[in-house]
Length: 470
Image (cartoon, rainbow, N blue to C red):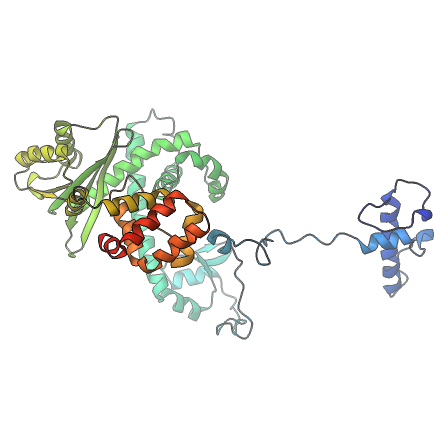
């Protein structure tokens, strides 16, 4: 019998089925023989009794083929060695290691001076208004989020550093923002004391508000907070389910509107609006203005999803209500409208200019030029780019081949973004010298078949014309 793990002589054992339990005990005893020999005193020796005997052939074979120790689970075993090339996200997971001892930066050794036996509370009195506090018996910087030593010179160096100065400024801005949010929430729950969460403390409301705000800012669906809840509750503040956190979304939106209103107040504003008709209408409005520091700023002041695309009357009414009622701004402060050349938008802007007498109607020049290009007849370019989008933008083999020639990934194409075609054409134009070799490689590797042959035919017919059209 050959198990594949050990090599033994079947004449040594009468049974055809091997019981490894005695072998395991014998190997263990064999190891203890060595320990018995290494003990210096009789008290440390272990009395193994009659089991101390030379190991059998089976035991020696089992000892030779013992399983190796488990690998470190935190080190990926897929790195290095032979095999297929790893993707970028896999290569980026390589564990960062410290540089060799002789290459490390200065000051990386042991601290030269010892910490004095001074209570951290004394340093708090000596360095007021520096966001310092005591955490777990240590001196802690609340704005830099790091533990400090109680050595006076080290604290002086820390509090005058540029890093601490920036962090302290951000800390006080955040503190003022927290106070504003807390006051707004307290006011709301005082007026709506029948709310199921009205009895919670302001700190819990503030934490739940900030969690909801962070999830919205990161673009993470609120439903996923149910999976993140065990981690988020490690701050020793009780969270709640996603269905209750979603009630904070209107509150986040309301405070954002208040912050934008303060920025727009007293400024001359240019409004740009557009909609994307995908399963209805996603209407967005962006305010463009120049502040007192002569900085041109853009602020999204409205994003609403509609069941149907609005007509010109509904659109003009929506924008008028947004400016006058929701933000309560002056008619004279609105100086212009930015839009595309859609007929509905043009008619709506004509209505709006009657209400907002100082406003000008400005077409988006990029969108206008894009529409003009649709009416210019370049069949060679149209046929080539159609084949390109069908093959290179959707075939992984073609994408990897393009990257091997240009050392950069092909930009993505989207039917929603009207300028996406120009991005793709610009990418081809910048790497036009690699195009013939790329098309030849596609044909050689049988990628694309008829589509590849069509692109090669269009290119070989007149390469200069195609380069000029792109």
